[in-house]
Length: 249
Length: 210
Image (cartoon, rainbow over the protein chains, first blue to last red):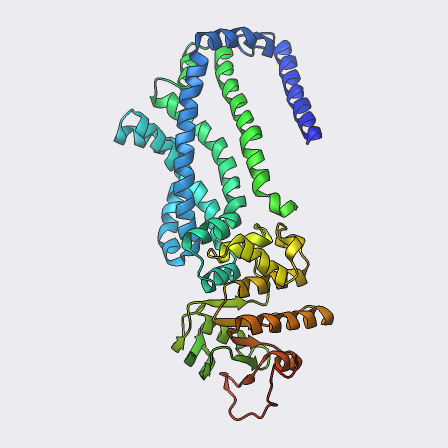
C-alpha cells in the first residue's frame, strides 16, 4: 500500500517536471505557463472565494447527475439483463442513446427544457444512463442461476435476495460503471456549464477562454482534476477494496 | 402428505418425464435411482418448484429445503450469515447451534471460500436443516467427496434426518447411500423417463443400519 502511494507521487511529480520543462522550452507564459506561474492566480482565486464557489456548484451537479444516472442505469440494466423480452424491446433504444453525441443531447435539453439547472442535470444524466445500463446488463445476465434456485426454494424475501444475493454479484460491474461514470460525467458537466450555465468550473473556463487567459483556464481545470483524484483515492478505491474483501480472505 | 403427479415435462421438443407419480408420507425418505441423464435432477426441480413449466400437479409444503450438487452458498457472506440470511427467523444462538451440529462451530465468521469442500457441504446441510423443513430434497449431496468424508456426511445426514424428521427425496448413484438413508426407492428409466413398476429392491430400513 505504501509502495503504491510512493509510486503515485513520483509519477505525478514526473508529470509536473515534464510540464515545467515544456513551459521553459516554450518560453511564453501566455501560451503555456509553468506550474509555478499558476500558484499566484490559484491563491487569488482561492482567497476571493470564486474557485471554491465554482468547485462547489460543479461538484453538486456531478453528484446529482451521478446518483441519478447510476440508480436509473442499475434498475434498467437489472431489468433488461434478467428479462429477455424487455431486453429485445429496449435494446434498440439503448443503441440509439449510446450513439447519440453528448453535445446533441445537451443542446436538445437546453432547447426543450430551457437554460436552467434541470436541463443541465437531465442532459448529463441522459448521457450517462445508457453506459451504466449496458455495463449492469452484462452483470445481470451473468447472475448465478443456482443461487436464484436456492433463494427460491428457501423462500428468501425479495429485499434480502436483492441485497445479499444480487447486489454482491453485481458489485464489480457497479464499481466499474461508477468509476468510468465519474470520469465521463464531470467532463460532460463542464460542457453543459460551458454552453448554458452562469456558474461552475465550466463557466469559468468559458469566461477565461474568451479572455485568452490560459493560466486561469488551467487553474480552474486542474483544481477540479485534483478534487476528482482525491475522490478516487479516498472514496472510490477504499470502497472497492471493502466490497472485494471476501475474495481476498 | 406430499403428492407428486407429473404428466409430462418437455425441454423444447424432447420429452424428459412422463407420468411420474408418487406420494411421500411425513418423515419418509425415498431414494430416486436411475442412470445419469435420465431426468432425476429435473424431477427434483419440479418437485421443489424451481421449474414450474410442466404438466401435472405437485402438492408441497411451505417449509422446504434443497441440498444441491454444489454447495450453492453465498461466497460473500460468512458461514453464520449464510444461515441467518436464508432463515431470518433463526436467532444467532440457534444458528451457532446448527453450525455446531455439523462440526463448524469455530468457522462461523469464515467465508465459504475459506472452507474445504467437505465443510462447505456440511454448511449447506446445516442450512437445509436449520429451517426445520417438512420436505427435504437432496440432489447427490455427497458426490466428489472422498470415501471417508462421504461416509461422515451420510452419518451426519441420518442424524439430522432423525432429529428433524422431514419427508425426504434424494438422488444418488450409490446403492450403499440409499440403503443407509432411504425407506424405499423409486427407479426412473426410459425415454421419456417414467417410474419403473414393480422393481424388486431390497427393503431398506435406515433404522437397521444405525
